[in-house]
Amino acid sequence: MKNRIFYIAILLLAAFFQGQAQAPNGARNAGICPLYIPNAFTPNGDNINDRFVLSVSEDCEVLNFEIQIFDRWGQMVYESKELDPSKAWDGQFDSNYLQQGLYLYKISAELYSYTNRSNSSRSEKINKQGSVVLIR
Image (cartoon, rainbow, N blue to C red; front, side):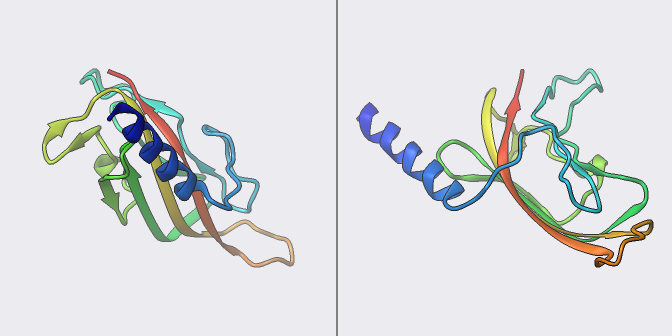
């Protein structure tokens, strides 16, 4: 039975990242509106990194945003259409604290830059997949 669980997890990971290029966690995208995605957070109640908070630079506006977070079995444990730090994922699902470990995310966003002076569009669409470590 353990082998089957392992293979299912591998298949889910392969399906999740199929055909996608992935930027390193904690890095900013090279587009016109930098999006910062941390690679870990520690929801332990000390008010330091207690939420998985994503951010954009101050000269950018979020036009559309969606994030989905999945556990290692592919179950969605968090979903939001807001980039509000006070509503960011706190490591809980159905009011229960989740175990420490690796979680996968999918992010879709459209960002608008107020300072882009190039001839290119002032807005850009971002689709990212990656992982974040929940540390307890």
